[in-house]
Length: 376
Image (cartoon, rainbow, N blue to C red):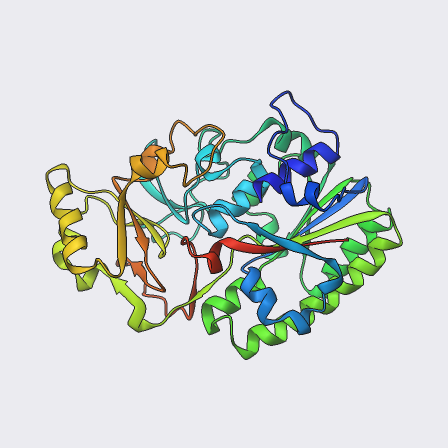
């Protein structure tokens, strides 16, 4: 998905001297190019397995190009930030929902930009410090050409305003408004050259009910109908419409859910609550307990968790290539807990409750990482 964004930069002739060498290979092999006006629609949580499950309901086979990969961790906080910065997680610096920022000695829920342990509902501040999230030069230039379309509840958040840069931000309250705004963009009534549009419902429904559920089935039919109209409209108006996702899903249940409360010895070794995601967690461990921590997991949780050192994963480029945010290593802790099979892990604070998720993501399984790509 990072390569996809770099292909968009090239198509819109945005070149800031940092080399557009990360173009998407599938566009070259299938000899596909973008038109002068581009719409990028992100369906949160609608990975390749979602497309295969609801292929008939979606009705998008005419525009299906193939499979591409999300970033790792395969989660909204990391992947949407990659799409909007043009950088891998190692580059932009956001490895997950719960991120520890050394500058303020706090764990922050990055999308609402709120301290994790806080009884206040308001965000941390009105602005995100520049070093918290880094951008490619091309991404900043792209925002000057961008229409930034999100649900109204999200369009004016601190995170959205920070990531959208100079874009014209628009919020929508329902699918009718979503289509009308996209229609105005495609038919030339809105003066930007690139539109970024975000649809969150598949993700929230898949967490709550599981991806193979009736609510997700109903939503797939609605979204498929809207996207088909958009594609037909775009083909009459010299516009490229790209549809993809930020990640996929795997099923989850209480039987595959681990909590630190179930392992008090492990919890005592932590100097901070687990950060990151339920499928890829970052452990900050007391220096004298590092060997004990690793031994505990390999003794009692080996079938459920693959434990790796953060430095090892950085060297292996799990979080992407292209240069690292200088603060990134400090945001990974000492160990990365990579969950095997369908397992997830939660470290619940006193102001939190254990979610009863039927679906989770953020790990390294193909169901989480592989996402479909559609293009007219």
